[in-house]
Length: 242
Length: 378
Image 1 (cartoon, each protein chain N blue to C red):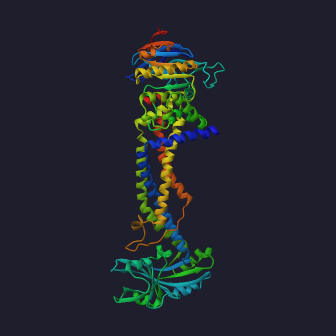
Image 2 (image 1 turned 90 degrees about the horizontal axis):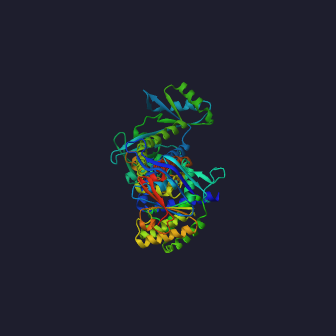
């Protein structure tokens, strides 16, 4: 479970160009379900994802993670609850690596290296045996039907293929939570539906999925268990999809 | 332990791929870097090799040389001094030496002329250094023409050319018989240029020198150690001359390293952001950048050092020779003995690899310590 209470994120604090991207957000994201953050550009969806995904710390408020089997032990007294709002960077990285898998809007693949290398990248610092990581990477690529591109450079792939590489990369460390930021922004309708099918398979595996999107194909999908509306950095509505 | 090795292995693999995808940029970087290391290494190897050669040659030098001074300048020494010095306790043998300089206006070269008694060439014959042979275009059996102090042309037959091993200090040497030498320079009888002494007990050298000065206040004893020091300072001076070159090379290298360091591109910054967002720690990113820097700098260091070694010891420092060896038009031509001092390699390493590595890591560290989302947006 991910619990947010009074989470605020300001940029350029103390300067004339101070900007509040997320303001007083409180909500609970249940494990094992698909939650969609819905809202227009600039509504704070991406910033909220980065805060939940331990890529940045909130300016104020608390974010507590609990019940995820991949959470590293951080002296929580055995409660399984970790307040990530004020953890040092080193611990945040540990959580980010083990618990979250990220799918970015622009895919954020490293250009110039092969598809398989891109998929294996998150596992390098873990010190896991190379052969095992390679095997898992190949399995993931096969699962997404892009195994034949394993030794191609990512630059040569189409948008849909790039996204599948990004998904495979997000799964290489077998995370509990998949975070996807505008995953269908660069895909056509067919590929967007394919993506949602993949999301459905994640859900059936018991993973928690958190998606920020303003694409109706995503937030109107029957797979979206919960849609949280956002505008101007605040939650404006939260209801199950129709 | 295995995890640690696997972690390094993975990061090194990525560092290699990372370097290879910017092939053009990195190859040119390694080339420039190699060239700089080669220049600096050549200077270090060359100066050290010259000093070593000089020290080896001076092994054969006399324990002490006694000169006579007049008005603070070197003057001819009476042979009678030698007889009295030979009587001082501890002095083994005294050999009067006859030598002088000759300027050859035809080839615009300065030669050192020396007389040798026993075992030297016969009258009318000479043994010459290879520099003289090259300059005057003569070989053994040819005639060498010189103009005596009286202005008369003197023809001397060349008996032999001195071996290459002595070329550093004997390139400009002409050895002749004593009567020829005295006749050529109109050198007064009963006098010598200086006296060469051998001493039985080296620890008594200073005492004997003091006794000589007491007995002959116008004399100046020069110890072998002082000669060695003079040679060293001469080569150091030559080394000192190229310290300017060395300084310029190092400065250019620092500018190059700094440029590389501050030139972390937007693409590189974004990549660091991606790595952090997918679970790399700041330490992992720094390790990656350290390996990248190490691969570039160690490759350049290795090739630069090999290039310098080949240049100095196989091509006899052909690029430096005109500026650094000999003077006038008589350049010694000789092969330096290949030898490398680990201390010099360490100095070279610290002069070249360390500044580059530091300059590479600092900007990466600055980017890597930012939040991953900030690094990705930058």
